[in-house]
Length: 196
Image 1 (spheres, rainbow, N blue to C red):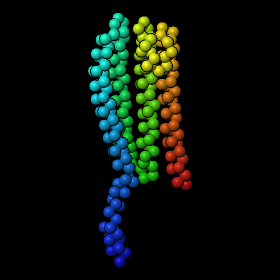
Image 2: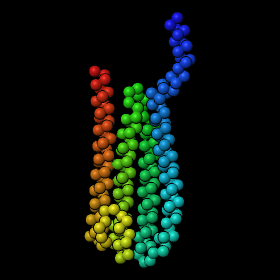
Image 3: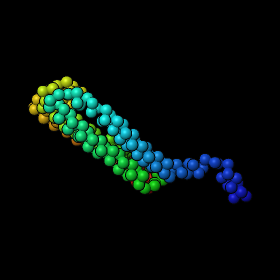
């Protein structure tokens, strides 16, 4: 009798397989991994379109600015390549996470928070180096207003801006890793508490 009731209940509870699939974490892992891959592809296409479009502005400049902006354009390619690489690596790490029955989203969020810190290092480094190069030119004052960390032009202001950008990038990485590890530690504490 109990067996028949269970069979009928299993037929009526159509969401049971979906909830089991959800609780195993595959949906979150695969979904977030593909989200990161799509994000990387969209970023790559958007960056490429913007990069091509900006060349006309580069050649409108005169003197040393053309050379400096050309260097910066290729530095931006290197930074974009690094960021895309980071996102794709994190996508693979998310997809490779082991299946657990207790915490599913926390390991994904830990990897994502670390990714934010790593991307911020690339961005701060690009801003720092770009601002430094622009600060060395006479025409660079108007461009420096658009770049964070730079208060003026000239070698001293450029070095100060570059060092500030690198420090901010490192601190950003540190803070994001700290937050990610705190979340991971809290999950480990909760997991150990459950076992006891």
